[in-house]
Image 1: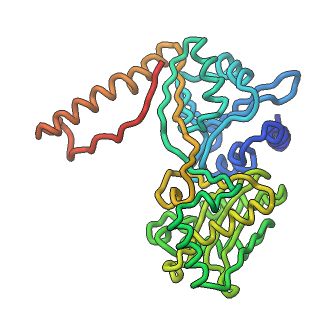
Image 2 (image 1 turned 45 degrees about the vertical axis):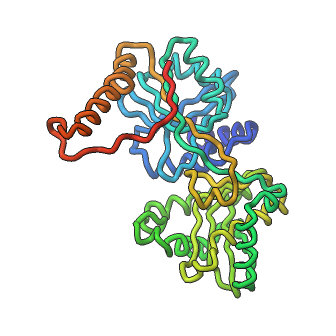
Image 3 (image 1 turned 180 degrees about the vertical axis):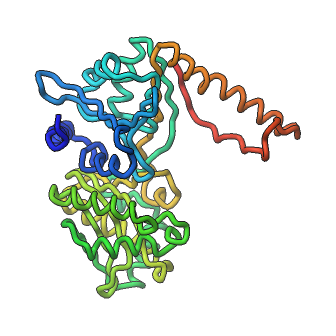
Length: 355
């Protein structure tokens, strides 16, 4: 299937399945161009009666297939029918390890495909990886902590002359202002801002160009006296506002422009019929000021019941943990293991299962 035809069919399938923006070709293909060398991208397709029924974008690393994702991919998921996808993965694609990283806890990859894998005696390993905070927009003000809500109102009154601006089309000036605001505080100094890399700037410009024609782009700005002082790079799907990148002018830090912007954006999104504000990313304290609800992310790995698959599973989930525990015991006793230069902290506990 030619790329243009594939993307068109993929988009139709994603729309029918109600897939999040990150599982659509408008997000996946810019990620592939940014990350994957030629010949490494492997999009697994399932068809029935010549109709596309499932898509899973992967990257090949020898006998391992891993999720096509970057540090700017907030969530990874399949699109379509898990049963069709599994038949192709099991019978038509060569691999001994399938490493999908963190996927949504309610993804068909976990709720369906894992069951098919276990029934075929594939090894499955899952571990709770993170929680992405989400805010239900209906009546959200009443659920906010009283002190936090009063503080928001006081800061808004003190700053005054605020308005929300939303740019839904591809606008070079708006993007340039957003990149500048996103880098203005600590991200610019840390080298993690979008503007810190020409490739990252190109990636976000590509996203804006692809999502804007579908009405799914939201570049929102908090304006003070006509001046843009905070910005969001966000995507929408008619139900949810997905916050990918926030930023603000540190000159206004005392007023909490980031929180004021979230409030104004949430009110506007609700007015336009959206139901959820998805903060994406990690479960950070500033996000917890808004909500106690979150979507868990579960890391998922599958191992084929072949010699290479069994060895790969044993090395990672049997041998490596034993060696790690031995190293920690030796470090705690003051006797560093041979070849080590410094002690490593014990990993934080996680909930893991293997079958």
